[in-house]
Length: 358
Image (cartoon, rainbow, N blue to C red; front, side, top):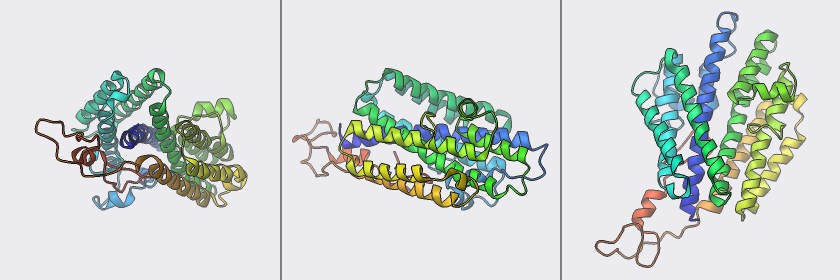
């Protein structure tokens, strides 16, 4: 597999996972704000927290004077200049998929293209609270349909491993972000937030990762902060738990091969997770520093994966192709300048770990 093809597959998976996670996060916040509005005079949860989770506060306030519900949700859903929005993420995933269509089942491209066109059409108008719920559920369900199709029809080869690698890394990153903002906030406000409200907030954290039902089944019916932290950080059987995602990354790297340095970083992450005292973290003793350390290691892991797999192609200026020849390849078999300029995407500053434009 060419390194540029592997990179496109990796980023297609990350963008698709990012879109689904963002839609799930906005949807869970939508429900929580409706549920708590009539019963709580204290507002431990607000829409601005979504900007903190996605790391987009600076970009948002550079273009908006105030942060209300409509402006924040519009920014996260349909802002084409924000690399982490749902519309922009689908655009990036679609472009990466388009350049690697021969590696995937034909239906995968059809489903993703359809989702992008539906989302673009919906985003031409303001998505107000009245139709936001239906739109977000559509995005989540369509993403799950694409993932399910690829998971059930793809050969378990390097392409599939690279696809899973991007998904698992993006998912692990999102877990740390949600816990860092919302978990730490609730733990610091135990003295002012009533226990029922606090439990409802922890339930929102679980719903942001589709983990509420599995938590009750695997851990206990009662919601407790220490149990939620342990479940989302250390559970080895829940697919959206941090440990499960890191283990998935390690397995994908093992199947692809040649990533000893990346495996070393994963070993450091696993050691840090194994030695973590969840009870102490649940008392808000070093929770932010612990999660920040995990995010830094994930960033290092991404950079190592990039150096190992994606920065391998020799970039030479080939002889000019003869008239009538395709611009994609030269007479000596090297990748042409036109192909390189199209596929080697310049980096952009994104609010998530790593990121390149399509």
